[in-house]
Each structure stands twice: as C-alpha cells, then as structure tokens.
Length: 121
Length: 176
Image 1 (tube, each protein chain N blue to C red):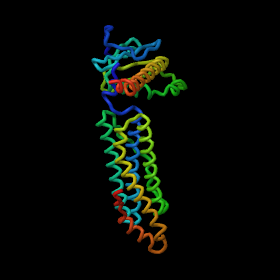
Image 2: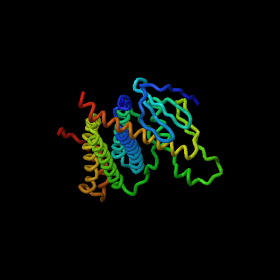
Image 3: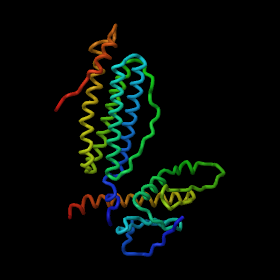
Image 4: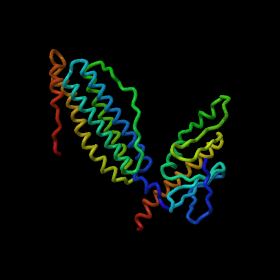
C-alpha cells in the first residue's frame, strides 16, 4: 500500500470530514486526498469513482448478520489503483459515512457551479 | 472549489446510471427479438423471423449508440449482462403482443431518462434522446400494425400464413 504524505497546503480544500477521517480536494492536481484508517491516499477522478462503487457495493447488513467464524475484515481493492484497504466492520461503516458525505458535498458543489457561478460569469 | 467531476464528465451520476440501465434494456430487447426470430423460424413463419432479426439488429444499434454517447461524455459505459430471455411462446400472436409490450416499455424508460434530464437541465442528453423518441414512433407503429394484422386478417384457415406474409411489408414512412 502506498501512503502519500501531504503537507498542508493552501491548494487543499476540505470536502468533508468526520470524526474518523477526512477528504481534501486539490484543484491544481485535480485529485482528492482521502485520510482514513491511518492512510492518506491520493485518488484521481477514475479511482475515486471506483472507490465509491467498491464501498457502496459492500453489503453491511449481510456482514452484520453473518455468524461465520471468519475474521470480521473486508478487503477493499480498487482495480488499477495503488491503494488497498483492509477494514473491520466498524471501519467500513465509518468509511461509507465519509465517502457518502464527500459525494453529497461534491454534488452540492456541482449544483452551486451550475446554478450560481456559471450564471455570474 | 473547482467542480472536477464536471470537468471530467458531462453526465451526472443519476443520468449516467439511467443511461446504463437503458443500454441494458436495449441489449435485452435485442436478445428477446432474436429469441422471437428463432421461434418464428422454427414454426415456419419466415417473414416474421426476418422481421425480428432486423428488429434485433436495430436494438443492438440503439444499444451501441447509447454506449458511445456515455463514453463520449466522459462517463463509464457498462457492458450489460443479459439473462432470462424467454424462448418459448404459446402462440404466433403472443410473440407480437410481447414485441409491442417491449417497445412500450422502452419508450417509457426513455421518457423517464428525459424527465430526469429536464429536472437537471441536461439539455445535451435531451437533444441526444430526441433521436430515440423519433425512432420509438417507428418501432411502436410497426409493432402495433403487426398485431393489428391478427384482427384484420384473422387466424383461421390460411390466416396465419397471410399475416406472416404481410409482416415483412410493414413500413413506417411518415415524414412528420
């Protein structure tokens, strides 16, 4: 797994934050930095879309009801992306909350651009 | 904060999802028409079989048109998985009833996408969909005309043979 150390910079704008993690956007590099479970990983457009799909695709209810003796871990692997997460059930719930909140904020940003900024230009 | 997602992709997540669902629907329609062509051929309805082969090709072209549009706009086009295609029919008439039902369902689905696009002010996709709406006029017309042959000619005696002969001649040439 590749961890990217990111020095605080004016370029990074906070998109969403929870008690467990945060997501920042870099306008100049056109990417996002996801800080979660001790890792700060860089995601471009394609890979953050894949991350969202992977996280939304986890059936949390099925994991909660699962009575197997198998460890309570889920590996989130994103194809053609350097990052891989090994998460416990509680971490998955927290990660999903972070990703959902991030995309709500990005959608809000899109609406603002669509309705306000584009008309003001 | 820049809208990076918008820079990369013209389509919203919702419209992209709906277009991918439509791609699947067109692929299912293409497979269903192929099954109808097979059934008609097996039962000796050659003209109807040819008609459904052509319809299957058209649906495939619709699927590819949508597929390319999603890609051209920066979205992710998903190659659909098709299963549970009905291959047995109780009667010659039932084949055409199902064909019309299928076309109506496709039209409704396209209307739903356009309604969402209007809500989001995605007029680019609305303009793209206009071609499909015109196409659906023809598709529904042909399916309805084919089914009406069963009432006009009747199935008694050599009726089904006559119906089959006339199915191949259905054309929609309205310029309106």
